[in-house]
Length: 526
Image 1 (cartoon, rainbow, N blue to C red):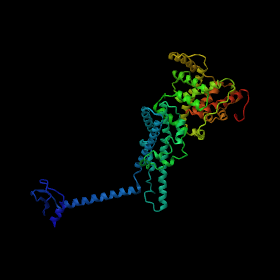
Image 2: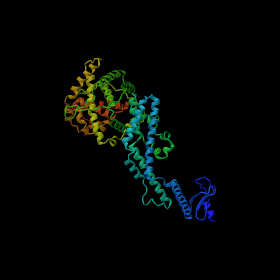
Image 3: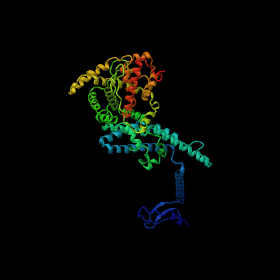
């Protein structure tokens, strides 16, 4: 009996000398090879029993591990940290997939150079890094939001009502986490990257075009599920539900996204296809064709001068400040419109010819621009940047006007052009500003919101004007400061905003004329 048990224990073993499987164990627990007679090893009954116990222990542990895996698969799932990491990675993957799809559509439409694709990759990396969505701190916060190991939830729900309540809380935590991720990295950020791509490729595309294409379905914005792979989409189940008809792209969020890229990438000057954009707006606004030539002339002249001039508020020293190219072109167009329609900043508003009706976009265009919650998205730091931007643009608009209104002729020679512009620009920026200049208007950011809504009465109340102040104000400053507000509020160069800017100037000049004649409207003044 013992030999049989020993033989069973040696089943599967071979002789180390000859390799024969014919081994046999005697009563002393020693194993011998029946082929060569060599003693293989000493096998005691205690060793055999120990090995059998180990096999049983390993088998029991393996069965327990399998049961735990099945239990996880059935409902408890992975840990909160692992689940949070998967959701964050899936969110970033979704955004990257949408960006890639959107870029491929624009590439097929315009034929971008291969260098633009590298630019898009770099801008995507900047936004992803700036959002800090993959930082350890963000992942820890995401884990805390999904951690459901409370004392009440450790035990299994005793009835169906408790189970439903537990599921509801879990879904709510998941929804809150995804909303938090979208606040850090959203689809509007991707549209701002595409705007830079079009600008770098010198295409006559503005930010408003991207908004229109996103809503029309040209760029995948709402149909996210058709772009993202089902495997990734399973990890962010509420992605589809959050992208509904109410989540229309916001112009204000796009503005913030562009500023983030400008600050992070330090892109001071971007290429601008000024001729194509000018031709487009002349056509879209149904303006006279003779506007195109003075616009082109001004665009050719102004880049030759150092446009980083920005006088300091406390002294006449020059401060380095660079205008974005969109603001440059907007100021150029506004100046030409001022020239054509007689808005030269005289003491009284001239008789203006009827301005042609603006090009009519879809009905939702103007509504979306009016509904943009700018007061909520503009922070105090953003307000400081805007004040500097407004001041610089105000000086720039006045400088453009001096060049256009000047009777001096400019040679075609490059040195002559640079010399003329340097002589014209430097005295202008070094001269002291009058007491009532536009610079004093930029102390409160609410002015931008008021002018943006074209509420002249609100603007007057914010500035707390009285009759004496109206009579002592610089007429030219009050003329162009309203234009500057409109330009800064709508720096995306869409035709509707450009028309609004001109209408705003007309209304403001009419108010100035009434104030000069001592006429005051009860609607405009408290």
